[in-house]
Image 1 (cartoon, each protein chain N blue to C red):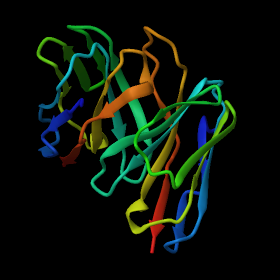
Image 2: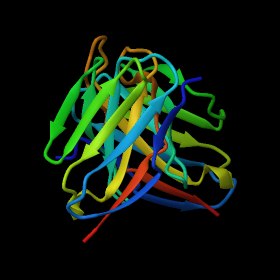
Image 3: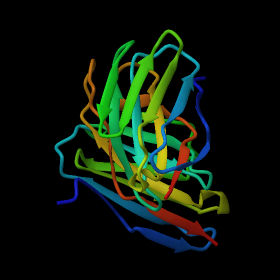
Image 4: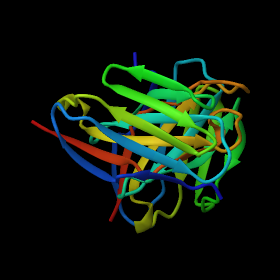
Amino acid sequence: ELKVEQNPLFLSMQEGKNYTIYCNYSTTSDRLYWYRQDPGKSLESLFVLLSNGAVKQEGRLMASLDTKARLSTLHITAAVHDLSATYFCAVDRTNFGNEKLTFGTGTRLTIIP
Amino acid sequence: DTAVSQTPKYLVTQMGNDKSIKCEQNLGHDTMYWYKQDSKKFLKIMFSYNNKELIINETVPNRFSPKSPDKAHLNLHINSLELGDSAVYFCASSQRRTATNEKLFFGSGTQLSVL
């Protein structure tokens, strides 16, 4: 059974600092997604990573994928309060799209002024 | 226009009741899903439908019955509700293809509380 683990589960950081969230998964997959969820809200897609070495950046967030290590990272640069949310990675079990996405445990990020 | 809309947003009911949650997407997607998010925020897929056909049923009790009248709608009916059914249920949709980078579009969620 595919397992997807994120760490840390909770992260409190000051504005302006950098940090990285890690996502490890247990079986081979070439497709990894990052989602953001604000409290009481729905999930919003951030990144789709489709191959080994893929790197995507949007604003202060950068995601990367190492399929050999079965590891993805979400790096936050110079954090701002608006980035406070829960971040989920999700791995596709079948490499056939979204049908068998397994979500990670989530990382609840709080940015402190 | 909301891309994936689900109703109701909140649902409070007694144990043993039967309830339904409705979901509609206006994105023209072929595939729709139901996910359950528990109190620890863990998200797990329940069902997936492609063009009205069930393609994933992830060991969900048969008290849960999805129904897809057309590819733009996927409703979830729950019989004999139990305390453990309390959770947030998310509907989602995507365009199903192989070798795709399509992402999931989620509805706003239905918070179900069983008393």
